[in-house]
Image (cartoon, rainbow, N blue to C red; front, side):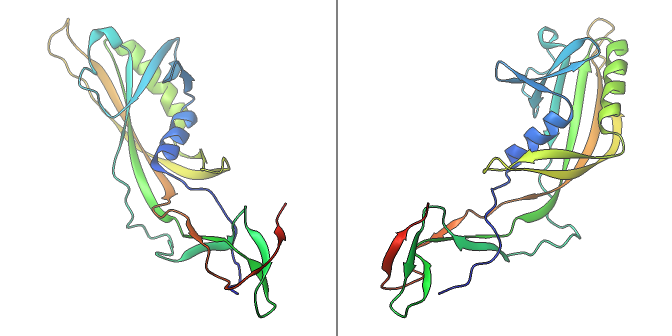
Length: 215
């Protein structure tokens, strides 16, 4: 019989990290969309840049650009190490032919990979006054060192640190009547991603004698 170690935890995905960042900014979900209330106006948040992003009909506008995860970090990541090996929640307790206690089903998973993810939060409008106020609002949310709360696949929350990396102008002035004022703010999140699914093992103990189902 194999000895158990660790404890079962949920999976952390890119989508769950995205959601954690959006909530850290103070956004809410309305009609299936992320809405960020800033300075008296609501900015609808879109991930990446849809093609018609700068149309006047959707101003003011906010987008979040996520770069690819950077796995070449200095934090220990335990590449290919096993995070846990435990009996499954629906396992039966058994005794094998040698009289050793155990279970008829186990689960195991390799450790999550440590990584850094850079995000750029972009805000646009035709009014510089509104963008300045929105920029000030976002600075109050993300300047310095903070954390985002991520919910894993088992609905357990965990916190990851983020760091404000700087900002830049994104103005696009075609003419006085068609100008678009924009600002981008960069954030780096120190996080982890589960790139391996949980494995289910059913052949750990041979010729078992069923002792009863767990309750």
